[in-house]
Image (cartoon, rainbow, N blue to C red; front, side):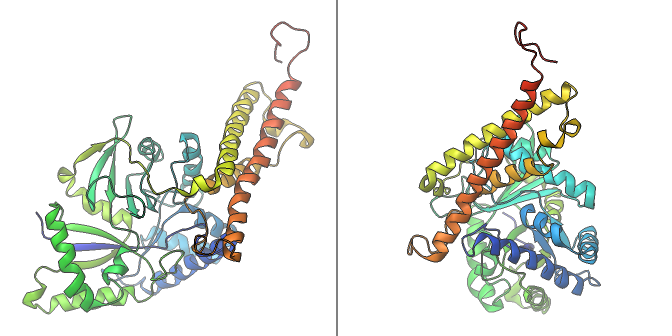
Length: 420
């Protein structure tokens, strides 16, 4: 059993597409959070200390929306901070559910290539929170996308961690390859423990409990990752006080009080910094193989019709892609067709976006159980359901266009329907 020497505090906003706010409001708030994180990171830009502000973009969905409206100056500031490691972009589109099949996961990971190639972002890690688990083949999909470390900060509501947490391990995928993985405390756990809130509470109440718990599960590493958010908890802004808190905590340890011998230093960090530190202890990481089943995602049964519609939309999009691939092989790429016979270039992406964000983990407003007829409940459900119906409409058109174009190339009266 190792004494915890340093806690890596990963600070981010938890992304709920809905729940605390209507979905259009969520996108706007998340845009503002990125702008605020830029300001706070620049404030500490000249410092290189454990308390220097760093920010983690938990999911790419809000960042992609931010990029649509960011000024050239804002983009320059973000790119500079990302290059310095003050802001990290992680690779998951949202906090996702096992409703995704492998094709859908691949689609949600496509933006990683764009973020790397167009903006130079070093997307090395991925993280998810709230959901309890993911389908086993996610390991291979993340590795294929160049992800080097994956962390989960699950919500134990209607579920639990499959192994004692916190735990850093190597998750072996169906291919036999392994992905460094961390199952940590819930995403807002840091603030709940007092980090960024109350030094005396962290020192006298919570850290002794954490230390005793880690001893009880024989936690093997001298470092620990704890995620933290603003006390609003979901769809929440950066916590401006966090750097001051970390500085005060570390300075109190430097005073040399005997009672502080078993207290760890704190460091505001990004997931990449955490995984770099874990590399020094790789020999201590166990290997676990198999499915990480999700027990939390019970919202889908409340909207079985829309869930079924979304699955059919996914089938149509896969069919459309297959036919389009055949047409390209025949020299009939969409760009070579008359405008009257092809979809606008971004329609396919919009269809997959709507499909993915119906399958995203947030089902219903935070008041939906207590107040099923409340405006928040009704509004959020309409926005959620619309994703499924939007995907249905666009996928139907995508498949129709592809099949119609293929039909144009079938010569009538030939055995087997020869194709030109």
